[in-house]
Length: 89
Image (cartoon, rainbow, N blue to C red; front, top):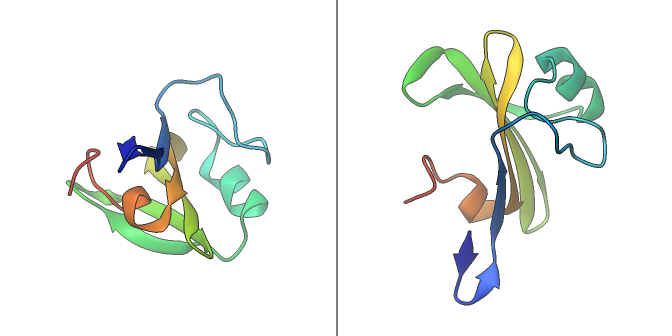
């Protein structure tokens, strides 16, 4: 996602690419929690039994979206844009 001409967010939706800590779509939630301790946990939009796990670092963040005990999607980038649902405001 680009905002004001600059890269603001990267989304991972398919298994393959991973974060520098080895977590990506298809990883188990427990693996993400070990790799990123202290994440904020919130209910996932539209899926009340699933969760968002978010870790902020200054102006940036990484967010994991769960599905059935696994990571379904990963969003990384600027804090505000990482919080967008479905890639929009």
